[in-house]
Length: 116
Image (cartoon, rainbow, N blue to C red; front, side):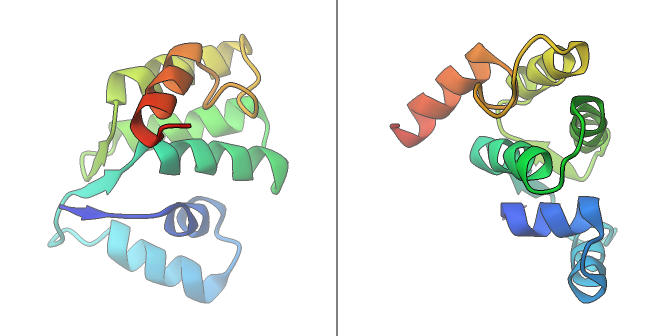
C-alpha cells in the first residue's frame, strides 16, 4: 500500500497543472500499482483546499469524495466516517471548512488521530 498526500489528490481532481495532473493520473490510474491509502487528514485538507482555494461547491466536493470512496484502488481511512460526512456535505447540513469534511464525528476522529 502507498499513501498519497493532499497535493496529489488536488492535482488529480482539479487538473489545474497539466504536468502535475499527468503524474497524479499515472500514479492513481496505474492498474499495476499497490492500493492507495488516503488518510483522514488528507481528505480533510482536500475538502478545505477545494472549498477555500478553488471555490468548489459542496455538491462538487461531495461528488469527488464519493468517487474516491467508490474507486476500488483507494483505501480511505475511516471510510464509514468519510462516507457519512459526504452525505452530510451533500445535504448541506454542515460547513465542511469548520467541521472537518462536514461531520462532527469525522472531526472527532481527526482530533484523536492527530492530537489537535
